[in-house]
Image 1 (cartoon, rainbow, N blue to C red):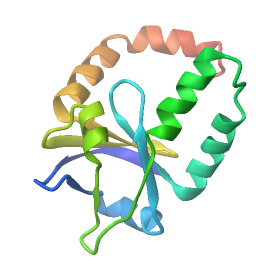
Image 2 (cartoon, rainbow, N blue to C red):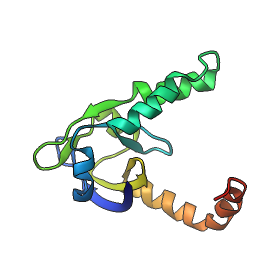
Image 3 (cartoon, helix red, strand yellow):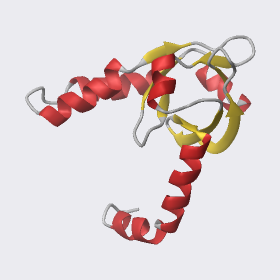
Image 4 (cartoon, rainbow, N blue to C red):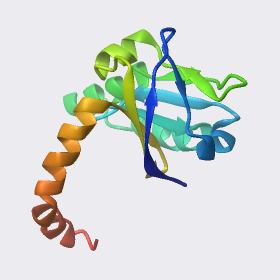
Length: 143
């Protein structure tokens, strides 16, 4: 399970140190892809296979289904950790998420999210201000 919020720096080669507590979970490899809200999603191989299967089975006749599958699947890349626990974030994904140097790695149960630090702060501040409204809306979902 991934939880928590961690500040890290991307090095000049686009490498990101995975937080130490998550390295063992990702040791067998991971998938990084375009996420939502201008961040990147990182999945274990097993979680990625579950998601990719669902995406592959979306109705091809619906434009939004095709677009979402393309966003997630075409943007995906296998990454492996080096001996220092770093992964290379491909340039096209860094560009998508506007990641330069300072990043936040956020654990969200079955995935990690990688955010540009400034984008994360803006997103988090806005979400915290709206937390009451968000909680009200989630009530209907049983949360």
